[in-house]
Image 1 (cartoon, rainbow, N blue to C red):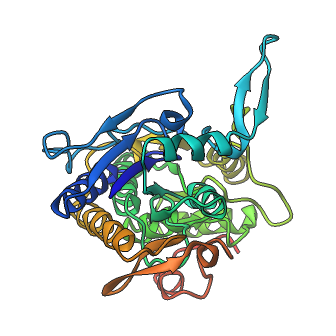
Image 2: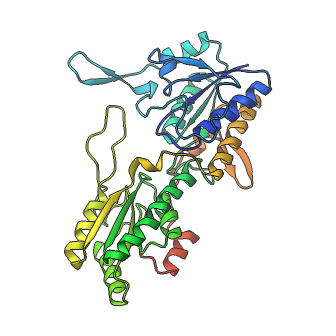
Image 3: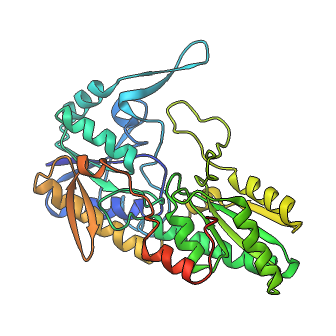
Length: 359
């Protein structure tokens, strides 16, 4: 058996732990393991394919990033091509990918990625490729799994930032607005905001009223707490409004969300007269060493993916459904995106402890 590993989409802490576990588990079965560099680019001649050995994956589990590198512009069904006039066009190179994989004797691909990579995996399966998916995203927005690896590390990074902002906010009687990642899901903001005792948490699943946010700030002032911490997900938006887009995306990329923290901070300052500062945490959430939880989960996922290949669970994704790992059809995973349930106990706990969601 010869398998190939691919890491696509945004990077996430724990990718190397998956690669290591999958490689070692496959080698233990006597299988051959290849690594496709930069998503699927290695299979399309735009990058290389490497041999993954025990030596190559030694000592990488604690490292951030991915030794296979990644891209969020490598969809083989909509592959961006630079034209002579400097503009881009998209072409379907999926048949080329399948042909190359077969010529290399690749029996199965383990695709490690989020919903975009999983959608590609599903379409490759429809073309006859044997693919098993591993859920990866710091946003935790992949359905049918309790958690994705990378999420815990991103929450911890955001929590560290909140802890530091608390001290400077209190020192200067300021309102500090921290923008975290998550795209259209508010999990990072919710978990880090509650753990960090934020005063306001704004998430896409609960559109906010800026006046109610300001009223929370005023109430704290009246009670003698003259500073406030606002944690806002990049995809949050006001009731009746739209999400904030940060500049133009590269060809083949989804739109870049961001910049909402500045809008909220300036509006709070205008309405309350309080001095406000904002910070976009950005890609710091993707970098650095994975937490122990993410290393363990990623390692479990990597080994489970190889077991899924052995069991011929084609078109399935490995998933955490505590306390066990299971496989779920990718079609089911993609049926509905995972979002914060406004009636989840974490949201209810936040409200009960005085946190405002601006609604």
